[in-house]
Image (cartoon, rainbow, N blue to C red; front, top):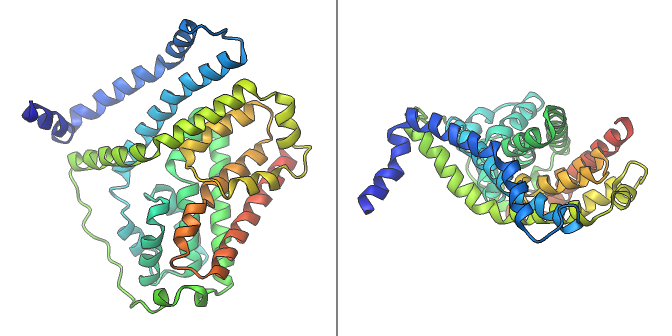
Length: 348
């Protein structure tokens, strides 16, 4: 039995050309039947479908497998793609480049580079050691968690290409401009002393010539690591979204997060900064807020502040940044997000 289990586990990497199309067909088939299955399941429950509880349950039962399936598929594909874009390769690409164009490159690389709050310090140290300018490093650190492949694909799947493209453009703009501003402020002296005293190293691009089976292993490893780590946040986010969907009146949400409430964007950012979740966890909440009449600019500002200025990442970065640089980082990014929210509420 153990031998059979090991063989089954190794089968995707041994037969990748069979595994990939078969997995895609199974995934697509399950995704197509999610809506009718969720409706049928809720119909079996002793709850009126048109009631508040019925609406909340249908939202939760449908969105939970939907978001988890989307997340699993995205993470697997991007895990394979990321085998070409290791942190070492990213660091080597950015090392020695001047600011400006390098900020654009760093923010763009952040989209396809694996990153989470726990890797903030080692990535930051590696970039500094390789001679990557401080502003360029911040463009990458802002973009990677906020404008990542998970956020973009989930936004595209749930809201369409216009919202996903809008979020991509806004997120990259905030990352690029914030990095440029921090770079122009010349705040290298506000790195912790031990970081500034580290010896410079030469960044090199290692050998990334992997077989297809090894890239499949990388994708499956990403699924185990990322989905295994974030699923509680997803369930929590969907539960909050379900409660909003089922119980919060549209008029109430429009009154506090609609275009007419001038303070809505500021409130959304202030609420979002101390929260901690990821794109997969916050997007179901975003979906419910938009359905209840919240303004798009306000919701995007909330999402950006939750993902791009998470409290745990700030606490972790305190190991390498002095308080003044931490406050500058939060202030510059928060101002960029506020501008984005107000502008889009004004023009949309």
